Length: 302
Image (tube, rainbow, N blue to C red):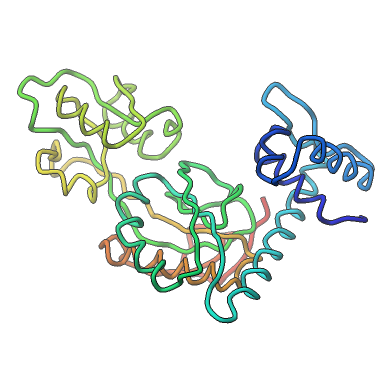
């Protein structure tokens, strides 16, 4: 391999699936992306991508080299962040999480970490029900990740149950849920089981979901910590079935020595603790026994 930097282009095209988007992410042009991918193919001796109706997809050969490319990227980011942070943390990190985790838990407490680390920048991206890190440095998700070489840490627990609004005097039948990207999320599956049918209305935002509940009287599955601050949103039945979900943070195992990652994860733990959602502070790595959160650190390969 003559130029390890070509793996940056493999990662960018894999994540964006189009030459144009990859070029934009890398700050270059489509011709350069195409040339670097071709050079990588020649070095490896086989094509790493194939063109499909859904964009550029990795071939079997490309899939074999993807973990190596991700490890190289993570190791370089760790080294860069640590060298910059000798006189205080200096880094830009991408944090992926469900939108309401940002809105309800992290953003209200963001002043703490940004004032403590003036040279730390955060890029927030909404992500729901995704296993891999993708282009994120750190991700937060419901349920423990089971794919990839990840260090994971339990942040807390969220309880979901069925709610209704007292604001509508003549409620209509049905329930409201979030959009299609949430269909496979455990809370959406819980709603389908609880109500015995598909949602009658879907919306992209929780604010829209609350507005629909108030105007129509339709019911919804909501996390307790969000519903509790809405005066007119009440449980359908206090003794009703509920869904408990662990909330996990994860980052690549090659970043375990990254001081910027470590500081950000500690801030996340602090945010969940202050929100009252953290009943246990357990750290581990994704391993062969994913339910044993108190066991020794271990790793898995996707």
